[in-house]
Image (cartoon, rainbow, N blue to C red; front, side):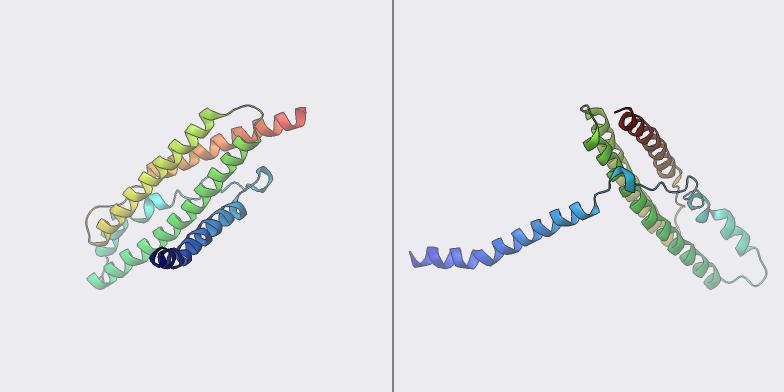
Length: 178
């Protein structure tokens, strides 16, 4: 009987931590939700420079210049990767904002939008897979193997952006008709 009591009392702090973790996770999601009026669309060509940032053309040009050293080339590549990672952080943030905007559209829609919910899940999955592929290529680029192609991720981002514009226009038209 005492062993039961001891096990139950020792498990109590663990259960408390689990509840605290779940509470904090759920409360952070609520504070990060976006309403239709809060969505601000990123600039359409904001991520196009990423496509050129790690191309080999610039590195070959630099290597052909007088006074070039391998150390300079490594620094140049490292700086370009740092800038590229900054773009990736912003891309993730903007994609998350667009996903939340679509969630708000789904929640506020007059009819059931299962097709839209499935599309956003598919888009999130493809975006996540694309980001993992980019991170893997970026690691390979760090050791001097290959280059990083982000054109597909940028195109899917811009496609989702165009779809959101259409959805917001339809939602605003439906709201003004009421």
